[in-house]
Image 1 (cartoon, rainbow, N blue to C red):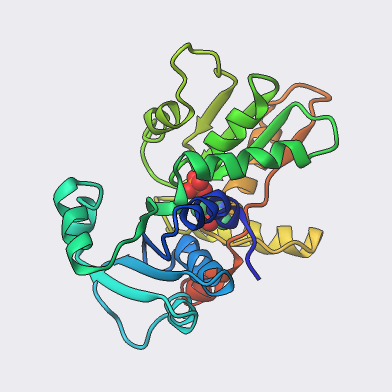
Image 2 (cartoon, rainbow, N blue to C red):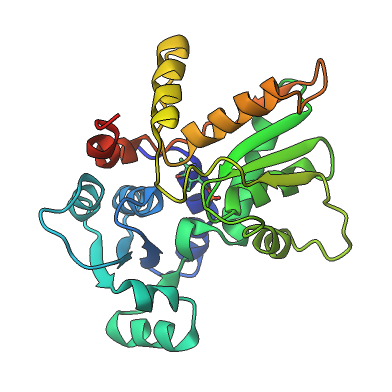
Length: 267
Ligand SMILES: *Cc1c(COP(=O)(O)O)cnc(C)c1O
């Protein structure tokens, strides 16, 4: 099974690789990455070799995400956090090319133009009227895709899962290629990261459990719980106008729950 926003971002990239007769896809992620998980699954399903460049050193036993990736046939290659920072630099990519056979280069999170194209399709699939669409943001590709899918209509609201005011705005601008400043109907809220990427707090875990009990919909604490927490908080604070209709995108990511269980059990 491949699903979630990471699959959306893979779809057109895999088609592109196939068209160019490239059989190996190389990409990047942390040890619990939903993107690495989805790429490994899709690689197995559609007969691609996959290589995952993983941030940080090898830790045994492998966590469930990397165990799954390996079981799908993904080759894992670990790089120090320091080197991982430079993963988009020419030298680093040249080294990868020498070490591995010809590969299709897929950026972290699958967030490139083709990744956005897959996410833009979400908009066409929504068959109800709405004023806002909201999503959790990490690398920004999903929000950028939604923005292009909206074509300047309605509003997109992202919730950053990463710490730092404004850190994603330039990336989104460059992804949507907003040269003529036409796509301005979006904002990113940076108030609900709970300390940073994969950081959690008791009130987030409590919210998540209540949400699941009330709605019967599972969340995970890295992305979707932070978005829904933020969204509910903004609703309570009167951010939205009376009668406005909000579509909140559940981006998936539930595979990552296993890896967060130990952390969450403390609360
Ligand atoms: C990666 C991810 C996001 C963020 O998507 P980006 O395109 O990286 O901004 C949101 N939710 C889940 C579950 C994810 O795995």
